[in-house]
Amino acid sequence: MIANAETTTLTLAFAWEVLNTVLDPEVPVLSICDLGMVRDVQMQGERGLDVVLTPTYSGCPATEMIASQATNALATAGFNPINLKTSHAPAWSSDWISDEGRDKLRKYGIAPPGPAEHGQDIVLRYMPQGRQALSTLECPRCGSMQTERLSAFGSTACKALWRCLSCQEPFEHFKPF
Image (cartoon, rainbow, N blue to C red):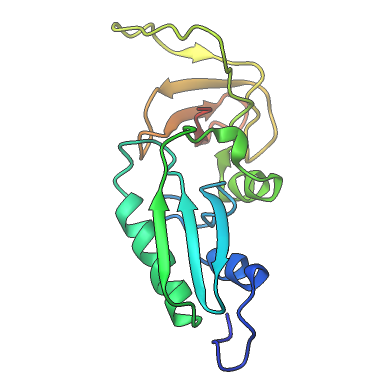
């Protein structure tokens, strides 16, 4: 639990601590800091803040909710005024997920993304190619490398559905962006 402004000095470190309590509504074990969505925080005077958030993708339906929750958490902690800006450039990358965030994903049963392939061509397929095996994707439940993709899309657009061929359990994979 975060203390309020009456018992805590408002500092930049405290602002980051507060933002670290704001959870992603689609993956509720990760904070927006774990995801790397908080790009910049600057103090403005003794109580004010400028905060820059980058959504995980431009069409993310949770962007407004996350911005509102971040603003409310900071206001409750005593920061005022709060200028929260959404920035789409540079675009968010799954490389921004912290090591702690990747561990949290794994423990939650979601395979964390590998490094994004920046600067390489992306092949778009309009016809399904069937199930694709990926020997480098580790099952977050049993650790086996024997996995297959069942669907390019999981419960949200940023995840894919996979199955472990060893333990037979389905799991989601957070796609690299």
